Structure formats: C-alpha cells, structure tokens
Length: 76
Image 1 (cartoon, rainbow, N blue to C red):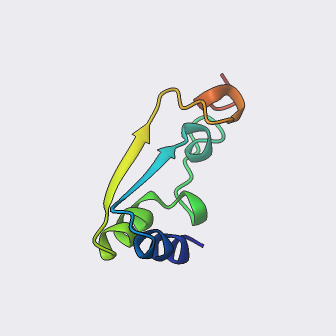
Image 2 (cartoon, one colour):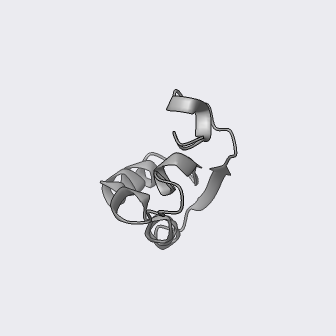
Image 3 (cartoon, helix red, strand yellow):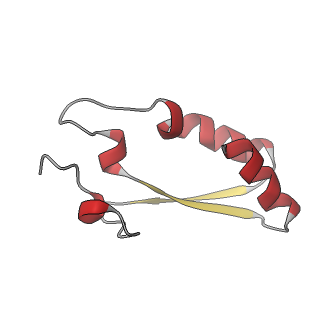
C-alpha cells in the first residue's frame, strides 16, 4: 500500500509526506509494542527516503485526526 501511494504523491508534485504516529497503534496493550505491517515505522521512513521526499512525522502525544481517544491506548 505505502509504496504506491508514495510514488503517486511524488508524481503529483509533492515533496513532503506528512503522517501521524499513533501511540495506540504501536502499543495496543500496555508493554506490548507493535512495529509490524502497517505500523513498521522504519520501513515507512525508508520508503519515503527512497523516493527523495521529505518526511514530517506528527508524533503525539495528542493527534486528534478522528482517532479514538485522540492518541492514547485504550488501557489509559
């Protein structure tokens, strides 16, 4: 999913990709961290860099974005 969207963004004239980093996606259960699949942040950063684009990570703690609890894992 990401590679195609990143390429299309570049082809459309974008030079920056901006995204939130959702805490409750990366720590769904207290002490259990998830950096696999769609939550593989390192892979995402590398894919953006490979296209020669800048990356603006919007790291919480609060991200709003129509996201349940706005940032926090449900165990809060």
